[in-house]
Image (tube, rainbow, N blue to C red; front, side, top):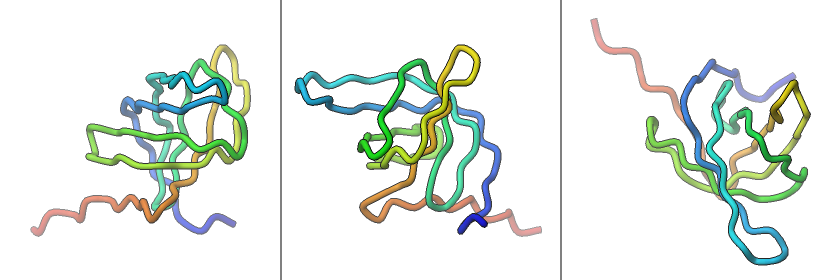
Length: 98
């Protein structure tokens, strides 16, 4: 059972990381869904489970670090599960008052 409910999310996510050779890499991904503690994205690059990445979701003013929890090849992309770290959390906007 998941700790937090997932909500669909369709927006662009910028992901960057620094591999052992020291040259920072990045890719633009599509989000699938989000929860308070994590994000699922699809992207062309295969990431290593346990690796830390920096994420930037401009549409939701969300920036910070996350760890790769899963990376599965699906069709022509990789589906990547990220868990937020260093206190990063996502909270949905409250419903407007009626």
